[in-house]
Image (cartoon, rainbow, N blue to C red; front, side):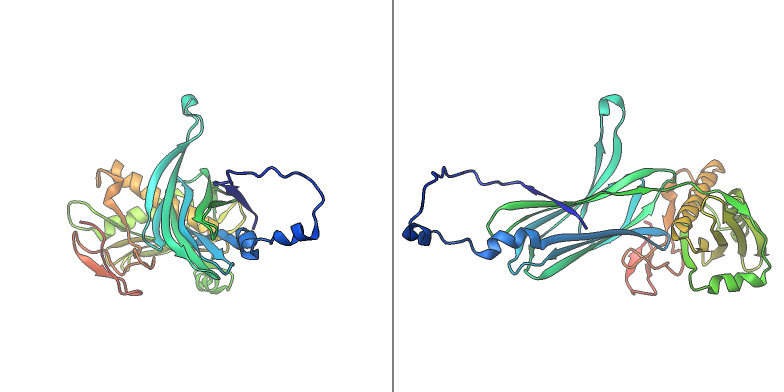
Length: 337
């Protein structure tokens, strides 16, 4: 991919050269620079991409040192839109700052976040992989993701490289109800091109967790998005819905369920971007409904049930201050205190 380079430390001294014919003796006195000092700059590269990853997005940045010498004091900045929440990252050690770009005097500022990390050394002929897992918070938003790195090269100069911007737009969708036989649900899920994603949350509220009540709230969020109810099992607290997005033309199957104290929506479609938008919309509708109904006073009482280390859905919603072990990576964590 194309990259831009900025010399942050140009040489301060430029010799005045008088043009004259050189003798063979003069010519022999000028030796060329070692090749590595000349071409290391072209051998420091960044490869990057943004792809759907379940119900979230994955921004991947690979820093490659293809020279034989190391680079040091490597500092990375990644700009992400404000409508993304950073779920987790590898490596996990980073800092996040809020930014505002644009003309603030005209109230035209764009809210962004800056993710920063650094490491002392990247050896020659080696690479460093950085992954940011980004959860959308709002739909119908536009933004960009861009990366910058600075480093000290083998000639002790500070250099900088930046990537092109990746523009991202969380487009709206419009669901049209579609009826299918119950027997088609399994066939739809088994198609090899079908992608699957889910959102699983826990709710902190006073009182006993009434599965029947919250099951009906899950169904309402799906109905409000205009999906067609195909099958509902009240005893097991699980329901199936179907519809077609008239914007993209893609069919989508949605499952709403209560399981082990978790409130869950699962979705399947050939369009992974549609899955992310639909699931984000369900969670947002649910949060608004819970606040309006007085079940919670703040969105902070809704907890995503993704493992903080690997992203796997946790097996149940633990009580306040209690730890839970991920059944995939086996790390223990506390969801809420």
